Image (cartoon, rainbow, N blue to C red):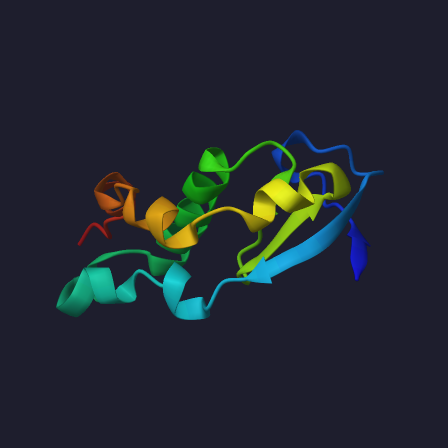
Length: 105
């Protein structure tokens, strides 16, 4: 299955991308990290920033969408398939994301 790229991450929207993988939703859900304090944060914004942070660590031509689907240009497909998602996600510091999106009461 191929789809025109959304133009995210500076990829030419006329280029064709292909679905590489789909990360399980729980891999992108930080509500467990927030625990009992999840109501203290704008979790929708936390989620959006988390996806943006992940995308900033991906090679040009590889894009993670908020629904967990990972697309890559045809040229980057093999490299995208080699990404160790567990290592990538475990290496991210999400604390600054939570700090930016704390709900002021």
